[in-house]
Length: 437
Image (cartoon, rainbow, N blue to C red; front, side, top):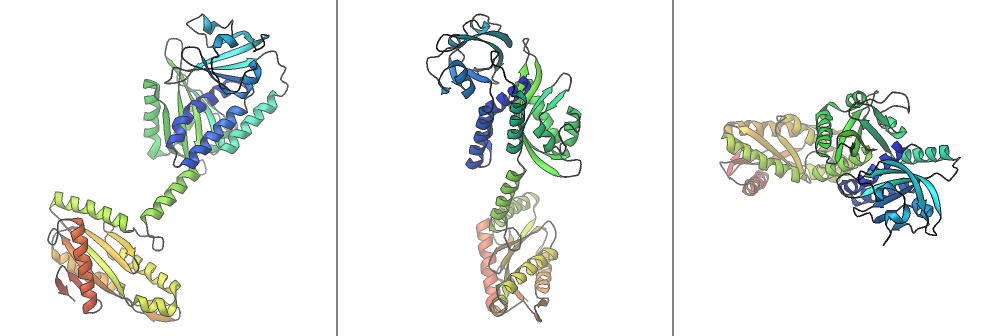
């Protein structure tokens, strides 16, 4: 396996902290950490993490076996104990690649090849140590195992040379962009063309910010496959600088998060919408009413709150069953949506009660017109089973700022007006304390 693969894994390992804390749930955070632990465990070369003072912070399983040291966090061990002849102990320029002799805990030595990497934004270093004394005929099998672990984890590694626009993708990334491995030649232009138009500018700005500041690059964006399929990806990475301190490449990982996004969207939808009618629920209703009042106050307009209670619904529900009752609620919700403007809000707040927010009104006459239209729409006969049924509506209306200037008071007046209208008869509406028919 090439060092490009390993360096990409290291960047993934560095980024996992930020990635794990910003995913949508603790469960997903644990999953992300487990994935990277698995990837690191599958690397047969040693990975040594060093502190700024040259102390050894951690060894992966391969490094522990190689140096005959305990795996994981270690205490009191220094780099000189492992690589006594290494240039890192004497040369402050610290070459990024070198060969040296390594020492086991029993004092025996063996030749190694070392790749040095500074962790972005940290004082720690990572050394990838390859034991040159070992004969490894299974290198191809190891590479295939690593590729399979990336595929099943839906995580891929990438490497982009910013000066030449040369781009490397691991096999897993091809699938994330809708291609078979090797089907296309990865280029930065190909990547940009695949990013959803609405996300393209944001992704590019994030990459520029990373290149200019060295801050971790972490973006969620959509890609459009050649067949039109849209998938969500999360990309994390950072820059590699040369000895002069100039950025020469970006490296990192990308993960398919489509299912996670869909789960979050479903949870959000359930939290803010009525599951039966798909209309906004009370939470969204009150939020939109608050915003409508703010806009009306700025533009010297009126806002009307309409509370609607269905007449005759209970009889249908009792006689024909809940399925028929649900159908009445769904049909009524759609009728109400069709009766008002697209800028108005129709919500179901429970049982057979609906609410409507009418915005951008100039006078009460508009409210009367809409109220009569709503009653006429709702009371239109409805086919249920083998019969035709009539459902009526009682409306209570409160107007901002005429009846109240606060959200809670406005809702209270509309609610009380609705019950007053219902107590008087059917298919009636009341505005504030004024009864109308």
